[in-house]
Length: 151
Image (cartoon, rainbow, N blue to C red):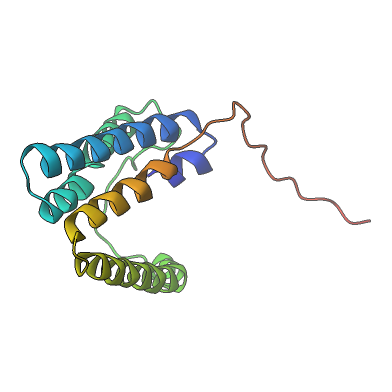
């Protein structure tokens, strides 16, 4: 959703949603790992549940109709084959890349888990992976691309 907001020219909303998601993710992970002593399971649930509040906020903003992105006025269940073809052509390679990156993440976590202090190493890796991903807003809006006219 953040990419859709950014593509529409809205840079503030993804920033706020990213901050909310990251704070919830880190807070839940720390709470579940440290306070409730769930270890790796706590890190997993924190990672899964962390973005849920920002997703709910984004959906509420979209359905309110005050954003540039709006749901279609009329929902239909008819399949548009041209759109399906385009989405498949773009989405399939992206999906394989995401699958590959997830498998690499599983291998890293399994390797960390095999260490003597595996749970601590996994928790540190999760916190270190999430923290640098905090979005930074530079107050400069991206300028729209302009095609140069060839003469």
